[in-house]
Image (cartoon, rainbow over all chains, first blue to last red; front, top):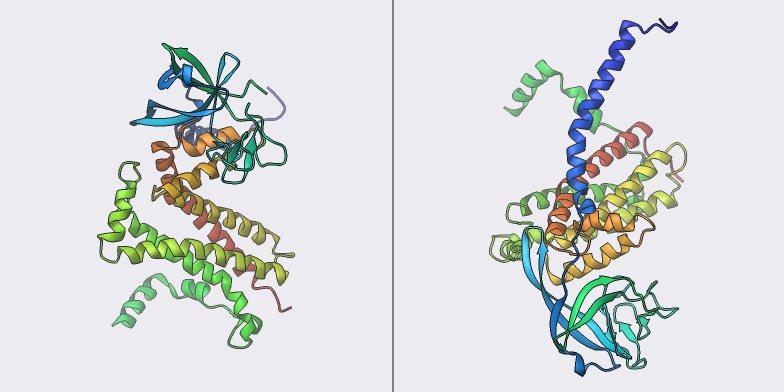
Length: 167
Length: 224
């Protein structure tokens, strides 16, 4: 028997606190897990999406290639068309995401008439080199994302987006 | 008739001290525009509250027609604005009031700052006020998406990217807001609706209660 005897009052206090805490946790845990579910969901890697852009027509000048795929947004499934800037680096195909790394606007190749060989974002005048490298002194803090890209039967096929590997 | 009804209730429940406590309080001369017109700057807090009440009421009525679903949200806003009687007025109240409440809360903050009213012993009320400002901005941000038009969609895309630029936890905040790591869509709209209509108003009312209890306990700060 320890010297610190627990009084009846203390014992009831501990018990009620414990039971109350357990009940509060029992109520809160399901709600919190419910709310954070999107953070914990795993996304499976997607397939390549075939475009109607012939690889033979791709040059070293980036061209905009649209690709359409089925997007599952919870209970809403829809056809979504995104685009990529595709060019050839030697024999290798390169596809860059048009999503500006500043705040998510859409960049254009040669969008700024004064910089015809750069990507330009019209929202806050962010600029990027051809390989996606952001130009210092403009708002973006990182290079444009890159798409996995391959040739399928002579046409460009676009895969998953990934961080830029060219710069 | 009404007096008799009041007396009948008061005799049983003694409600006079309750409303006296709430309504009867001194308005010092230096904050009364009837004495010094320049004292109108002391009205901005009350005006913020007044517009907040309008926002809550008009918002309650808007949800009678609004649907937080990406297929129907825009249609339901179009319908309530153009087909329902006084729809343009009720939505207009909520739309313009949303901007006005931010203006008023900002002017109120300036008044408190330049009269030095945030100083001891009122520091805690300043802290609660800053939290209220944050809640109001959160309501503005989440409410902006609900009409689900192009302006709303792209403003929210940019807003979520700003949230995602927070170091370390930015990506988690982004997914918690958008409901998906890449898509800004069906789950984003329902989440923003829930946050706009239930979570933030609950926080707003709690903080407002704290704000008002504190000002009543401490009284209005003295003249300059």
